[in-house]
Length: 118
Image (tube, rainbow, N blue to C red; front, side, top):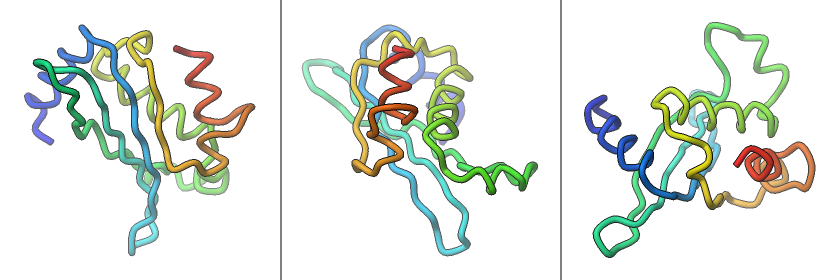
């Protein structure tokens, strides 16, 4: 995604409430990535836009793979992605995922961490 396009989207998200839609996937090279989409109101319509594709594990630090794709790791990746563009967490009003236990559990999972943070 072009940096100027992402900055334009970040500027919109700074001014409006939005929902976060995420899915974690493993590709053929066995690298795990987190796709982050946003959904917000724009000109009398609700739009969904691609926000970021984040590696779950850093290639700079292979030890992170031993921790696994935990709720904490995924939550931290989501929050860092928004904070890198100064998008306030207070503007997040919704969360959607595929329903796996890492995403939607009651304690120490992505949804519960987002609920506490936002």
